[in-house]
Length: 455
Image (cartoon, rainbow, N blue to C red; front, side):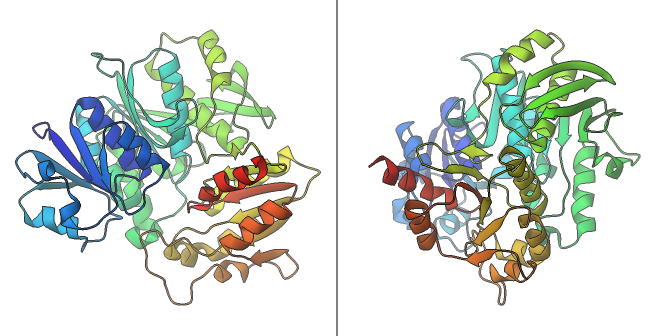
């Protein structure tokens, strides 16, 4: 891939693809691409030198990107196989690769720390990125979310400085993580997901075992998943972290926003937890375990100085400012994530009524986990369900947000509402405490609601 001075990216506006586009620009490659929706992120990429179109026609491809000898084409699986530009490149002799192939190439180029798990990937990668960067360790990091400390989803090493580590989210979707050649891995959770890809929970778990076994040096495992990886083929070093006091790196929560850390069974240090909740304590502890093993020059005083400066990742328990009510926005889109996030909300606001707005993501996921979604959502005091966000999928007959609602207890307060109705409520009679949940685009409403109250 080194020989291509130009890169054309299909789906360039996606959070993972846009991070990769920024990497290519940093390398000095001319970068362009297509996305069906132009967003704030695509406008930022254009300001940084990328050329982007939302037109599917082949004629929309810049002429200097139509030479197969000098143009690498990268696409995301979300691009349909009959997309005109994708077909043009595939039939025209171009080198056409998935985003996962590029991640595999980068992981062979730099010492790689792969962060995996059905939830916690972005937050853990965010912690790892922020701490290493603030501790002056040169890194390349591609993160699946906007890091609030940077306003970007990529952190690059200083000029003319090779990265000591490549931090990457090792995503199980489309078996991406099996292409990553990682030195160390982190696994936070293995709750079944993407059964449209894996079909069975056994196949899903087998893929995680294959990923863990491929680690060249070691793996950092959450205490609640460690038992699933007791097979013979494993990395030379295994580190366990979590709430279990016997873990190599353990934690307790004196408060929802404060964490006490332990190393090898002994008190290590205590620190504020800038992003509250037990799940965020897990994410921080995973990052600290890896740093403690790989960056021995870092001391406790260094860590205590930088941890409170962390501002989290956009849509990971983000507090929305500029509205006259408490509004938290979170990307949680699996039952376990939702339950944990709502428990954190109840701990933060124990005497207030918490209304949860859930935007289900994918028809297949809703079909597979409707009862579990309903159980998790009952941690809120009331739930408003938006229509399913289809993303890459076509509708499945009989599957809708009502598929979740039918599993609520008969007396549990809930409604099926439209985005238009949600906007009306948020701008006329909002609840005192609200959390929006899901991997859809419900967050796109935030700027408009904030503008309403600032007018």
